[in-house]
Length: 288
Ligand SMILES: NC(=O)c1ccc[n+]([C@@H]2O[C@H](COP(=O)([O-])OP(=O)(O)OC[C@H]3O[C@@H](n4cnc5c(N)ncnc54)[C@H](O)[C@@H]3O)[C@@H](O)[C@H]2O)c1
Image (cartoon, rainbow, N blue to C red; front, side, top):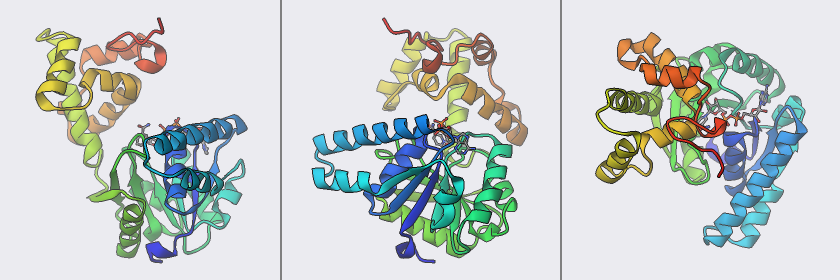
């Protein structure tokens, strides 16, 4: 299947990433079915998509007519089978739990047309393991989007051991059609971006832990001196310190001690200070 043959997309999980991916696909002219396990999540996703499209219109990134066409191209469902039945590609963006994704991939394999590609938005789990949960491993691939999908240009394409060259070409081309820039990497723990970012964050935590500088000054130094849009500790608070600690643990298994989470991170997680979502992490996020 060529990328030009892709007309229908099933997006699984309507959370932070799923709703944004659905929006980008619909804005790119594809017909989208967005699936989640609770109606409330789907309603919330619809509202978030509407707000995001409004903002894009306001900033003259698309016209009013284009925004309403994109909205109309998105249907929602609570039935996994319905999300897959007519899909040319299914993009999975459910929680980062390997057993859950394996189970869903096996079901999606059953419900989807034989030609469909099954893509996972996992940030670091083994796409090879997900491919092995299906009877079409050559058509399984990692399609790692970045948050927020409508604004971030990169798609990191992760090639499982089983992924066919044709699947890779189709997903590369599809990414371009949706206005993104694809990069390709092998299915190695942490891919390119998660591995590189985590190494950098861990070193920043060590700088903080050793008392070399305050959290504010570390962030200021990296923003102004290295031209990062956000300081590493603030970024960590937004990603979620529990999520980062979990990623560190997987990277330690793959690459050894250089990814061991510093005690500061471990303690913040133990204290329930997970960052913005819990009101406190490296910084306070409590509403004044
Ligand atoms: N948040 C990020 O910045 C980011 C960036 C890149 C990749 N990812 C990856 O994207 C995936 C989703 O992350 P997220 O941040 O959007 O999570 P999220 O928690 O915001 O959304 C997950 C959604 O999946 C739904 N869900 C739970 N179980 C489900 C099931 N069995 N079937 C269908 N839907 C189910 C939840 O109800 C929720 O709406 C993860 O694999 C994550 O690692 C996240």
